[in-house]
Amino acid sequence: MADTRHTKVLIIGSGPAGYTAGIYAARAMLEPVLVQGMEPGGQLTMTTEVENFPGFVEVQGPDLMTKMQEHAQATGCEIVSDVITALDLSQRPFRASGDSGTTYTADAVILATGARAKWLGLPSEEKFKGHGVSACATCDGFFYRGEEIVVVGGGNTAVEEALFLTKFASKVTLIHRRDELRAEKVLQERLFRNPKIEPLWFHTLEEVLGTEDPLAVTGVKVRNVNTGEVTEIPCKGVFIAIGHAPASELVADQLETHMGGYVKVEPGSTRTSVPGVFAAGDLTDHVYRQAVTSAGMGCMAALDAEAFLAAEGIG
Image (tube, rainbow, N blue to C red):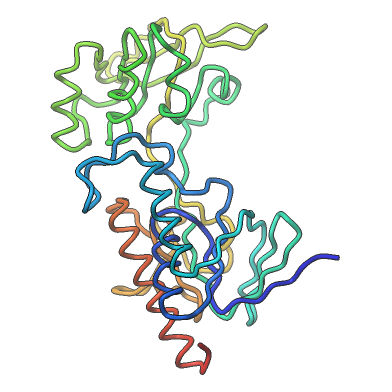
């Protein structure tokens, strides 16, 4: 028989926003339940050095998230290894269905599902995913020791991936459709100083090339955006680093969204278009997208939830 559990506050997602919300909700004696989702710890578990989180001159992303999880558990937040597959916000208590078969009911919900990697949408990209095409250098860079690699993108993600991959690759070609990067200046300086990285300006990725049996990448076709000329670059790995999209599928038809799917919240708060539902972190943030801002929003969401429940005479 399927299990049904009730909580005052259900937190969906386990990145900086989710864990911080758990800490504050637990301290408010709301006995929150946090469902981790498919990627416990979120995007930071796929990052190496984190140098801009207050209190840490440098910390590994997975280590930082482990500390946040331990902190949330120590304050009394219950953390559940499950994935929410459906969420009904049409009536209260709100109902969430877990992949485990458990149904969670809650008086308030905090959404902290974050964002996930974007892809170019090329058929050849899809074909070679997991066979030479990746969106996570820290996950797969180790497999390309001594090989030539291509990174696509021009923002922080692309530059960080390219720099990390120089630990393994003999050469990293950074493909960007413009001749200027969007990444932070300090990251750009590191990239331009690295002799293993060669930027290829004014180019886009047209096709991933490879073998059929076994599936493996052998190179890419790139197009010059100014001349239209197509050339081939030999490589063994292709890393797509063009940003992230909000993971808002659970609520896309239930909450007001904007800017391509980001959940809209009231200015200066984490309140969504449904009373009792709050959203925090990269799910709502198309501007800053930093671990520290996500953590701050997680705090806000817990405080907003506490105020809402108090007004309802709960908690």
